[in-house]
Length: 550
Image 1 (cartoon, one colour):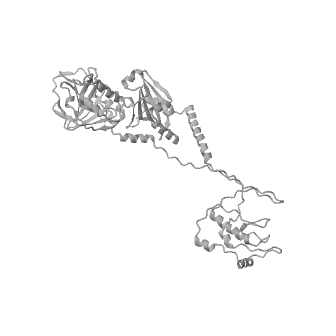
Image 2 (cartoon, rainbow, N blue to C red):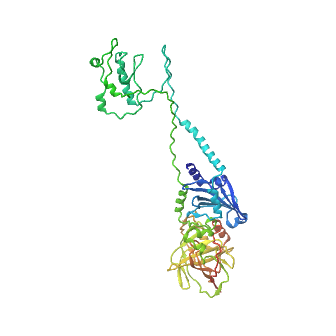
Image 3 (cartoon, one colour):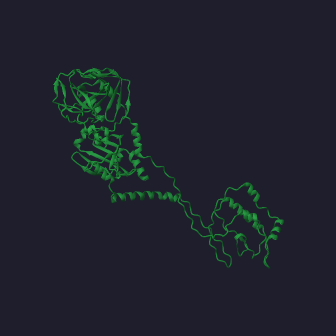
């Protein structure tokens, strides 16, 4: 698991070009317009029964120009138990694998895998049982990891202790094997050396005398103490140590010891026993344990635990929560218009509504429509990059009057090409000015823009103050004149539609000005470089009434 997390972190922070070069793309399905592929080498187990992998859609040559990119790559997380998936990140590349843009997905609500769909094919590729090649690849990775750790373990292992050389044997005796004595704690060694000093000063003891406290009587008449247990005694009490410390041997001490000693057998020499204080200071086991030749155990050095890296999915979620302008939908790909109605329950109108926008404005009823009254002026503004378009928030006090109802202007957005069609034709761009009435109703005024003319002063002011990064906003020390942005000809179309973006709320009044406003070709190119295509497809009119100024 730790290895998978480390690899996943590397997969997250790698540049798109590095990922493209190192990937092992395999075809999942294809048609005339695209190829869907998966990088099987990127499939990693994440957590809670989920897996993460990279997939991509490679567009056909005839689709590249319209989309503005040649390849879209997506990092998806698949829930193999619940048959759901969510997208973490997307990367857009051109025909030469150069980065066009990349984006993190804020709304990662798991989506149900639809049977017989592309999503199900990808889910099966990721969550299916591993092949023999996959298992062999995992085994090779484990072996490489073990081989890389072996030199470190050998270098860190302590050297085995050398056995002491056997002492030279006496005449008539066989050589004794060397033994490895267990290490003793420092306080016990000090007490033992004191006892040995006292015993060296004592006279020889009778050969047949019983060895005190389980000592072994050898042929050389020396008293050999059994090995002490390898324990660490408790911290000694200074007063007790001073009270029970062995007293130096004196003539009176020796005489008392001789009187208290048991009578020896005839012909045997006598010697006094060592002071009892020494015995109390050096406790011994009742039965001496035999010294065995044991092979020293070499314990592998402890390797400090490496802290687990942060969950890359949580890192991405935290970064996306900080981006307040990402709406969680797109104009293309898996979050495109076809999926808006499935992304959230409150967005169902995007796929189930009957009065959706935009529509193709044709066969309208020509009537004498009352002109729309515009109450616009020069204003300061805040320009935002929402990830899908440019949004311009304006000052208060401006609005329009439509059929006797006043609507206050709140903001406007820019789109390429125009979302609505006029007799089947789309204009180069359109600006949508969003208004709201006192009772909460929405009215949108669409101003069509046509390239090839003189530079548009309002657009140029916006271009001069673009945010420097996606998801950012900027409040410049400049103003825009919305009154000069409206065509002088009051002719327009009027119909009931919806918001052209999620949640696709209906019963929105649409005013589409008939006369387009001019803009320069290079101004269109600037916007096209930032947003290749950000228009919703045409929606069914479903017999709606469209009024048209004559």
